[in-house]
Length: 178
Image 1: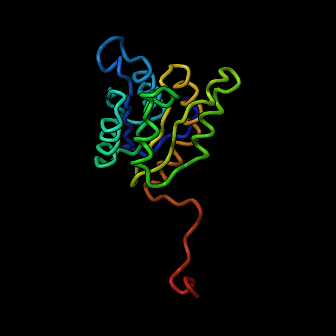
Image 2 (image 1 turned 135 degrees about the horizontal axis):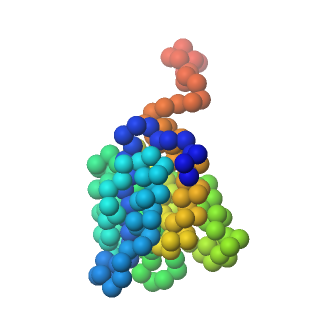
C-alpha cells in the first residue's frame, strides 16, 4: 500500500464498525482496527474506530457526525450483507448526496474470484458535502480487499473533494451560456 499516492496533508479518516456483537463486547472488533491501520498507512490521520450496533439511526448518526466534522473520508465495515439487521447501505443512502457506483462495484469485484459471495455485499460509496463515504464488508478479508482498491483512488478523490481540479480551468464568464 505504500506505493499509492498520498492524500492531501491533514486528511482525516474515520472508521465506523457496524456490529451488534462487537458493540455489546461479545467479541473484539477485528475489522475496524485493521481498516484504521490500513488508512493510516495510506497517509490519513485516523482515530480509533467507532463501534455502533446494527441500527439504522445509530449508523446514520455516526456518518452525519463525521460529515458535519469535515472528516474527508468515512469508511464503514460491517452490515452490508443480506441479513435482516444488515442496514448499513440503507443508513448510508440516507446520508449520501452523490453516489459513486463505480467505486462500489470495484470493491465488490475485488474479492469476487477468491470469495464468490463478495458479490452479495450491498455496500455503497458516494459523497456527502466534502466527505467521501465508503461501505466495506465486516470481514477482515473484505477489508483487505477493499483497502487494495481504495489505495489507488483515495488520494485523488480527496483532492477533488477539496477543490483540486486536474481537468484544467473551467469556462470563463464569456464562455458560459454563450
